[in-house]
Amino acid sequence: MFRRVIWFSTGATAGFGGAMWVRHRVLRTVRRYAPEQVRDDVTTSVRRFGTDLRDAVTEGRRAMVHRETQLREELRPGG
Image (cartoon, rainbow, N blue to C red; front, side, top):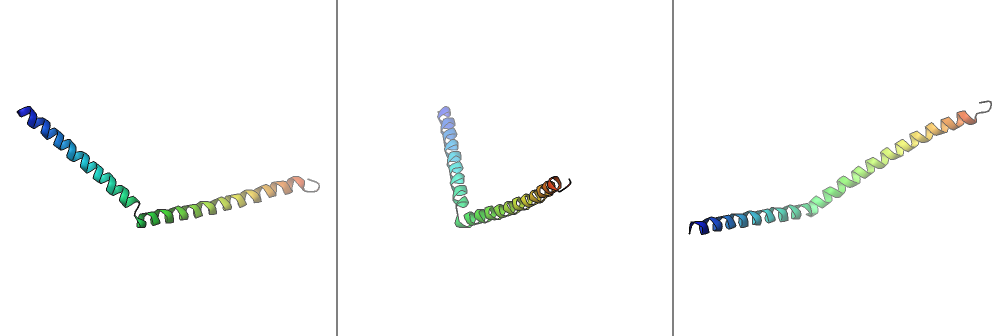
């Protein structure tokens, strides 16, 4: 009889713990795909993309000026 109580308690605890884990995962997923969260994620991504694009253009222009200077020195008459 005592073994049955132990096994019942173990099963009930595992079942309750599993149900709580599933509930937590479902609620977290629902919060993740809520309209406000999706909007915030998209806004953050667009801002990050804009910053990265601006940095890439600045770096490209800097490299262009540097390379143009090199070419002018190489192709300068009498150089």
